[in-house]
Length: 394
Image 1 (cartoon, helix red, strand yellow):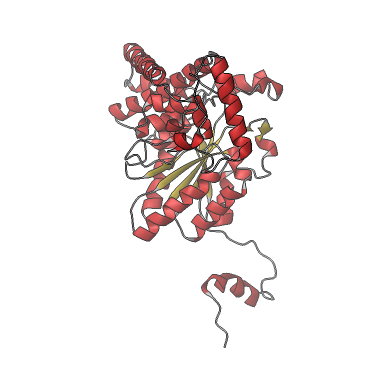
Image 2 (cartoon, rainbow, N blue to C red; image 1 turned 60 degrees about the vertical axis):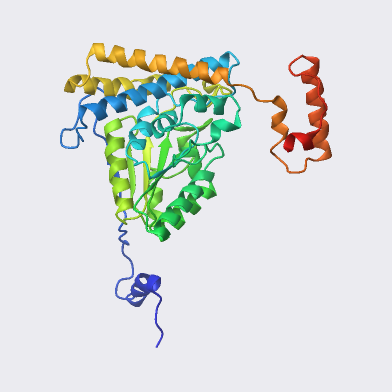
């Protein structure tokens, strides 16, 4: 007598009944839902409204505003040559801000580079974020005690890191969860699908949060995948998918809360697709007018998450015009102070860029270093020195 393995039971059962039921739809347990709570005009579905208390509501509003104002300041700094290439988040504030505040301190957050509100909420000093965009290695390092991974620029590589963290949690019996941010472009990468597959098989406590901003640089969503939704990709890996209005902070908060609670209770992973829009450039090295229309941008601007949430809070009596002005002034003052701190601590040696790539530099790299040093000395940017890399490494 042969004994079927556990994971073979369902297909073997269907094969055994093949002549009795030659063709039928296969029922799949995982599901995909859509969630929206706050309409573009500020009206809310009362039955779904989480009704956050006043302090938490104002905190979320301020967090989104901080992300927006930091975004605007970074673009100015980049145009002035005071930081390097910058990747804006304008339009995506609700998606990452309302999801990150769901996570506890002991949970882990795995970011990309387009979540400044998450960094701020999790305890990254604003000047550290500026350091990252200024090209300083220190800007990629999470503060001590913060359960975040370093900023990930390569597409989808962080999904595997998130899966690994969740696997470790399950092995250790930790009752925590991992929140992993990705973009719609990441869903075309093998790393993304490998992470989801492993997470599904072992029912890991991880939430994959895809910020679908409609454009992977210049590639539109329609050419990224033939799937009607990104959320439905979860079905192939045996867990639920949720598509929600990514410009609706209430929907993001509720959807992420449910997914995180499911993860912590042993219910396994969730794939969330936050439908949002990148209202600015992909990075400051990009010109989106080459591939998208002004009309498209203007349509999405009407769904801007910050004024949308502001209308809601005004309607609930949590905000008033005076309080809005106070929050704005407070955010701008904090941001201005951070810029000063960032620019007061730029003591890096330009030659440091040659120090950390290889333990033993190649002859070609040593020659490039010498040429760069000579150019810096000629321009008076550094004092004349002997090019001795071994001493610098020590």
